[in-house]
Amino acid sequence: MNKFEQLGLNESLLKAINDLGFENPSEVQEKAIPLLLEKDTDIVALAQTGTGKTAAFGFPLIQKIDPENRNTQALILSPTRELCLQITNEIKLYSKYIKGINTVAVYGGASITEQARDIKRGAQIIVATPGRMQDMINRGLVDVSKIDFCILDEADEMLNMGFYDDIVNILSTSPDDKSTWLFSATMPQEVARIAKEFMRKPLEITVGHKNSGSSTVSHEFYLVNARDRYEALKRLADANPDIFSVVFCRTKRDTQAVAEKLIEDGYNAAALHGDLSQAQRDSVMKSFRNRQIQMLVATDVAARGIDVDSITHVVNYQLPDEIETYNHRSGRTGRAGKLGTSIVIITKSELRKISAIERIIQQKFQEKTIPSGIEICE
Ligand code: ADP
Ligand code: MG
Image (cartoon, rainbow, N blue to C red; front, side):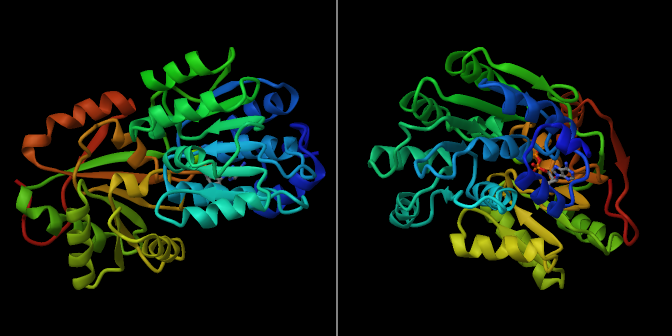
């Protein structure tokens, strides 16, 4: 008997897990799955990014869904369309040996009528961004009056993005006796407030240290003159020919500009930001997953929650405005036990931010120098 069997999962799920190649449950899965299977409870689960939270709620949820009943039974809220699509794919993989479970993704930037039609055909599980979900509820396109489960995934990121009101509305319009499962990497005040006001005595599961970064990630900074940022990025790429990375910029404009320059200079790069159409974003993500793109230049919003295997480097081309966001950026690497490096390209005037970040991630940065070529560091 492997450890997944001991958690109480059924044959169909165990077969799917076997296909996925998961050998043993991660810590958050080991703690959450038996609890969610056995009890009708609300739960708050805090675990760093990359610890397998999707399966921690996905497996027990699928086991609890009634495939014969075509009503919407579960609503999973998640911060971005990319993440909605990713969770939907995962849920489909987990439930592939169970007939009759339909999962539909609902998010902005795509046809609301098509999404409504897909739901009408019978979707037991809806995976939605809060904004689009609220919109569909307002227009009477979806019925959440019979849901048994509401899952808030990446709750801290959803609240960071300003979805507090939508989440509260959705939680209030759905049945009082549903179970609410909240998954988050960190527990900022707004998350605590939701747990306190909208959940019934939630059980709390914590994996690792609250608010701490992942120990599989090492953090480095490179001190450069502002005008040398781009040159520094190129040198880093040259020094790491197998680099597979997300390069974060602060604005859509910078994201587009850096990606264009990289492409012009012969690197496998592409931009991901909110000004692209949904089709463009999907195609960029597909090429990135297939490794046709080595450097995905992205804004924070576009890259939120993206889980692509084996990202070697996260590059902070510019630091985020909110230093808490650094945690989410660096969480793109070092996932599922693999090692990764998070790099900050920084100028002298921003240097004090490093110690603020160190306090948040509870890890120290190493100062590095830009590899070879003419001296570009101060
Ligand atoms: P989180 O939501 O906590 O950031 P994800 O659910 O996105 O993490 O999972 C991160 C990665 O780990 C995914 O690629 C997933 O397929 C993989 N993973 C999840 N659980 C396991 C497991 N038990 N064994 C091996 N890999 C796993
Ligand atoms: Mg997740």
